[in-house]
Length: 231
Image (cartoon, rainbow, N blue to C red):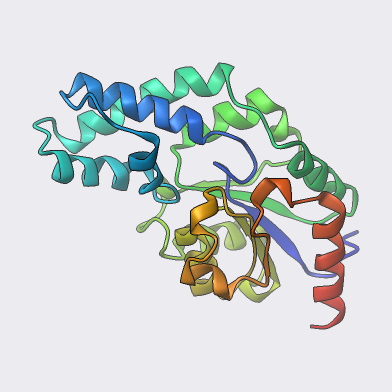
């Protein structure tokens, strides 16, 4: 029985549930180095946080004048990332505790991510989060990635939940924009501190400017309970 009524919760994956951005950076650095771009930095990487891998490599191709086709770049980045994802991804402890608390309360949950289905599967299995998170949507499965609402709307459809009943957890501005466009409430936990003032986050029902250092399972659950009681 869902003790939060008809509420459903949809999680972004990278930077929200798991600390995977360092792996994405390293995979990108490797691929770009192979393509003759040796000086890709973390600051460069931060420009692409929150958008799909396919859109990222398409932007790289244009920005760096890469000769390889987008499909080849995408495959190379996914290969490099999967190697890292299987062995070097950790779930944020308070996010894991939140997932467990929601599961105990019978709240339907899903993951909606810009990552490939293979990457999502590898991370959820490697962290053990797949025990609770079985409904998964990749941006590869919908027409448009974030900031379009497609992945969140598809996740709601698979959960059998109405968009206004859904609460999204997101770390990136494009994801917060996607949640708003989907007509869903959002708990924003910025992964990149400098993005906390992004206008997209002003639509969040709860904005934790300190990111994961400020997030606790208890406080997030209490906010959900209050948001349901005042709806």
